[in-house]
Length: 630
Image (cartoon, rainbow, N blue to C red):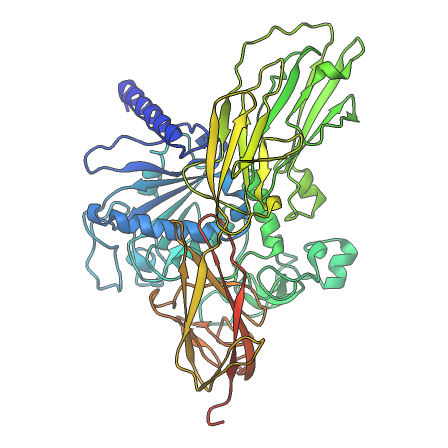
């Protein structure tokens, strides 16, 4: 690329970014926002911009086999993938650490190679994606590969990203199940399960998590594990007593209800072996698509995501002494799930700043001579229990200054203004933390005043973050604003405090039982289907979930072979491609799991997670499964 073209590209990026900021679609200025459109060539679209690309973890999505006329289908597939991702912790709490980009590159033909079979005609597509490991008869149908060289070339169009700060996800225009992991993850865009492949593969590539499958080839039990103690954080040979005694592996989480269902303990199977190795939970996202990460995996992922960014985004320069006649400041990241803490210390003594992002040295009346001032930024997330992880550079950062009272600070004339904020272009959820950062005059700290529906809201010393959860807003839509005290500039958001609603539809039962004060009961003597639908008064895809008998919440996706078909429950489950789906009662994921029917009454709960992150209250009904003929 010539220097002239580079200049044009930078200018276009600057103008696009300015437009996005004016529209309130981004909260901070990215390194670049969009590449210019050149005919039918690729276009980089900023889907979610939370900060400069070189300071964020960047997800770069690209489609293959979508023609120019089918780009709306690519955008719809991408939206579904993202909403599923944001419904899963820790992505839900740390989505503000992530930029999302879409590289829209139309293909000449629709679809990808070897879909649905090896005899399918070849397609002319931009990334040469194909099933069967790239049309290899010795491979497997579901292995969906991409030309990594071509994928890298498209990803390189996103300025500020590189192999170290991005994850590429290529979506194939297909409804056939398939995908692959690694630096270039793939998934079929339109398959019912495909949106669950993306977080699983990011678990591999970003978190270093291992598969918890107890098989390598589907349909074939993996046999006995014969290796040493695994290096994997979520596999072990130790007993629970040994974990506690040695304070090893997931000993801090033992006995707790697993976020993915059941209790965290010692469950046999994993690392492609059926026996001789154990995992924390009966099922999780690294074993069965549809469930969430359990606490052990989630802790790993929190550290991995946080290691891609710096908790301290900016601060008063620390390269030379500062005077005692000024304010000193730090700007932090802003997790959606909870504010970071900032602790100030002077010569090792903790100052009573109560989380403020600035400290006014003028009020400290320092004695002559040099002093040491530090600001320690820590993520207090309950998702982390290991002190070593908490103290790591991913979750704790410290900045220090030498303060010399003999120095005189020259006023810099900086005017109070907003410098970054939670995007205003879409509603924020009632469970999120909203932020607004400001400039930093050396002679004072601009105060941010918050209002909800016109009423002032107290924040305390940290007025840069507002945790909406503590306000307990009534269901509905609310107006949120932030203004710098004494200034005219105002930021406004719409707060969506009304979760999406869900409704269920079942196939015809033998009979329906309604009892006062109890959920309705449906009686079956064999298979039945469940369809979940959702409605929301805001735009954006809604994730639907259900769980059986208090087990882990399971993402509703239709049916593995048809996203538009209802989910099918049977007494022993349905085998599809050597995996088992829909066993009522105690779940079953592989053919050698216990297939004994769980006759009797079961409780099925359902809920929604909308695009703003609101989780609806769970509602329920009962299903009684009786043996045939009874």
